[in-house]
Amino acid sequence: MATENERRQQMIRRITQTIVQNGFADLKMEKIAKLMGVSRTKMYQYYSSKTAIMTDVVARYLEFMATRSVPQSVDAKTSVTNFPQVILNLANLIASSSQKFRRDLAQADEELSEKFEESYASWCHQVRDFLTNGVTNGAFNSSLQPELFLIQMEATVAALMQPRVLTQHKVVTQNVLREYLQMVITQVVAPKYRAQINLDAVEPDLEHLTLKYQQTLTK
Image (cartoon, rainbow, N blue to C red):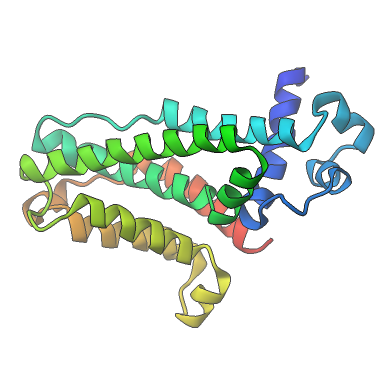
């Protein structure tokens, strides 16, 4: 039987996807309760306001960034080994923190927004350092510019979240994340190390993210 905290987390997971796609400025508490799968009365037992809901949503992001900290890679082998997981985590974070969500958060709660943005910037800084170390130890292409790569990923992942873009370019949703990861590997990892990339270790995360991605696009 689910505990109170587990029920609370289940409710937040149900609403987060809608908030990521559409923001929350126009969401009313009655609509939020429906999306959470509970009555309005029941929802108020857990959340007294939209601010309380957003606090829990942001807490999920902060927990993700804290528990998925970017590993330090001191040599080429560890850089190559850790690369797929770092990129999947980055794609997950970018995809789930849309500009609509961040805009509405900034307008609704400046303090909460600042906490999110500071953590997001810090986490991306870790990724930049990871990529820089990989260039230094020879695991990644010497032409790689980590700052530009991060900007490119933010733009590309955001575009992949738009059904119109996928339709326009005839991209198959089921394969897009796997194919994008393969493309990034080619862009970043030095040729002599590409054969050492093992996607088996990240297969569960890749499948989970693909499923989430497909659900988001079909909502």
